[in-house]
Amino acid sequence: MSQFLSLAEAVEATIYDGDTVAMEGFTHLIPHAAGHEVIRQRRKHLSLIRMTPDLIYDQLIGMGCADKLTFSWGGNPGVGSLHRMRDAVENGWPTPLAIEEHSHAAMANAYEAGAAGLPCAIFRGYIGVDLPKVNANIKRITCPFTGEMLAAIPAIRPDVAVIHAQKADRAGNVFMEGIVGVQKHAVLAAKRSLVTVEEIVDEFSPRTLNATILPAWTVTAIVEIPGGAHPSYAHGYYMRDNAYYKAWDAIARDRDGFLAWMKTNVLEKGPEIFAAQRQRLAAA
Amino acid sequence: MTSYTPNEMMTVAAARALKSSDVCFVGIGQPSAACNLARLTHAPDITLIYESGTIATKPNVLPLSIGDGELSETAMTTVSVPEMFRYWLQGGRITIGFLGGAQIDKYANLNTTVVGSYNKPKVRLPGGGGAPEIATSCGEIFIIMNQSPRGFVERLDFVTSLGHGEGGAYREKLGVTTKGPTRLVTDLCIFEPDPETKEMIVTSIHPGVTRAQIEANTGWRVRYANEVVETPIPRADELAALRELHARTKRAHGDQA
Image (cartoon, rainbow over all chains, first blue to last red):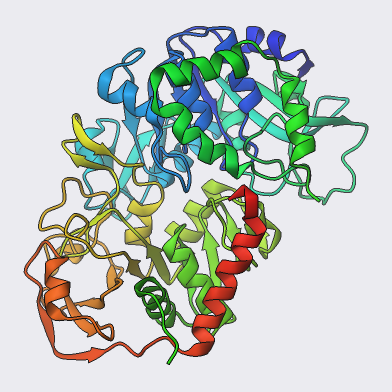
């Protein structure tokens, strides 16, 4: 049953050194505030999973939290490279980073297999391409009924999933809408989960009968953090901070500049800074 | 005569290839501009799908990321990412996949992974994202790319998504039943696959562009169709729609963009 905690308590309770951690959110609802707390608590040797590692993973990697990254598209959308991720992969700074690279279809299938309690994902993919040559976790399997050769990769079963959602109710159920990505699958695939939300409400209303809801008994910890997805967005609350994504390119390019920025904006701050961003970018 | 840029010519030529009856899986950037231009001009009923899960989306402005709120707000429905890749893409419900890339070879195989070796890359690119399965699951593939010797190469360092492989019946031999790349639109010309060899050959050249220019910007020996036509110049209504779309996009993202 989900528990309402402070962000610091929630990270202490759900994320340990050496864990496999999936922070998800497909452009929308990326759990930035939670990622910052993981950095403040100096988690080490994490094996990070995310379809589209962007700024929050660049920050975690640059601060030395991760030993491994599993991903399918690694970049700053519309801007360019993730400089901290590249420095870790290419130069081992601040610590070597192993990568396991997939396609979106593969990772989406692997999350779904994890949520379904299956050991592997089977799909039609990776045909005529080079990724299977550099990723030993991509195998072929023959359909026992038709003989068709299909791709198989291991299910994603993280120790902990971290997501941001629009609302929780007082019973600890979680509601999200808009581009919902793989967050529900990630939470159901994981042993533990940490969910930050824009607000805690008495009732999810109005809602449709088929709303995306994670029942309280599938969630470990809930934290209310207005603006907690900034600089990504929360549909109905605030817009994506495109200027921040652009500014990140220069900040992350240089090691010292990056460390100074992280000290001022993350290490010496707390989750309360996100509310001001929400207010600034609130939908007109 | 209205003047236009090579980029506008490319976007217009790419948009013209789409029909109202198409169900199109749209990549971000240049493919997105071309697909929305088609929707705003001759193909108002085209179904545009973005991999973030938005189906039949009609964005008023171009999205900056693959998952902008605008895409969900203007969509018929938004599904989860696993549903998008399993039911809609792998399920064979998409007629056209519209891709861009960093590097392409003469069989329209694409590289968006690395330049140089995989373990010690010269340039680490973002990776495949949706492209590896888009390339084989969509009915056919259109590609839009600016032409340059660095982008149009004899041999790819890494095959991120399959075009026509090594040519001929390569796709069929791998059990792939879809057509693969049928059209490559650049800022200079249009390539289409030779029916037999599947090498991408020039079938249409944009006005004012020379064969020497095309060859100087291509890393392989360019071949031409027996009959090469001139691409019709952008019409005033096409240019107006494209420029209004970009102006709206700029206004909307304004100080943000």
